[in-house]
Length: 116
Image (cartoon, rainbow, N blue to C red):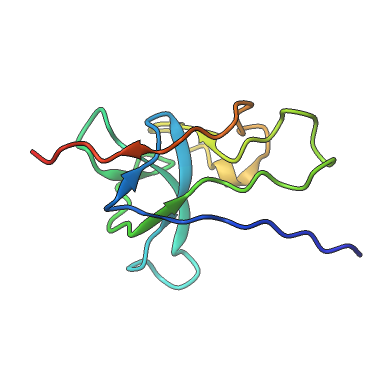
């Protein structure tokens, strides 16, 4: 069986934020073992905090990364991009399906907004 690999590039959460419409992988060092990487997003429009994909507060986030693109040739052309659209406040778990992936290429990251 052929082994496939893909590098995930982690960003320091205090240095740079993802785009407002992207769901990304979050590193949650204070979470229980086995639950320290979770899908989520930065809430630019509300309290300016990190939220899990289901809309619950994420707690302390130290790093984030775009989702991996997945294996070439397995999914349709343009079907996977490396980030998910934000599904705010729903019970949908984007880890459970592939159809939630957006068809656009990952965008450049956004600089941190000024602190109030």
